[in-house]
Image (tube, rainbow over the protein chains, first blue to last red):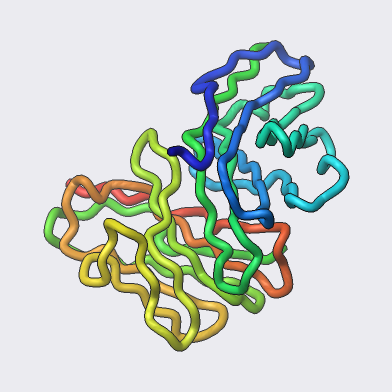
Length: 117
Length: 115
């Protein structure tokens, strides 16, 4: 079974609108972390936001927020007031466990977001 | 965050040759992770490197093909050996910074094309 599922291969959104990128995950480990990354056409991976499994509040970083629904095992990324520069691939990733040396990430297949002027 | 650099940023290589990719970080690192991203695909972990010990490889990746060195806390190399066109990918290093558990950064990547 896939550990990270991103069901939207591509999305088109009008500039200035909010956009939600879906991510569901599967783990039996009570301790885990969820990450979102942006990958523009240059290929670099830009870290956006992190949500820990024990965090009581949804994470926020500027225009990015994470809609964390633990019971549903979903961690959707919300981008408010989208901009043309938000056009990129977006990856959801999970880290299971918090032990030293176990910080590897498992990635979803990604969503290609295109912002329309 | 830290400054993470990779060299080369891109290269075009001939089949059968080898390429060594360097990853340098300007702060202390615990673990170093190397990922591969094949064209149009997601990231896949190749191996995990801890300083002073042999790297741990994921299923489907072997040391003879992807030897890794980790001579100190801020530097690591990944070699892609005996390359074939199927090795054409972006290769990214990802250090775990000290102290940090709620962030994981990546180097800028090495875009490799094998002819």
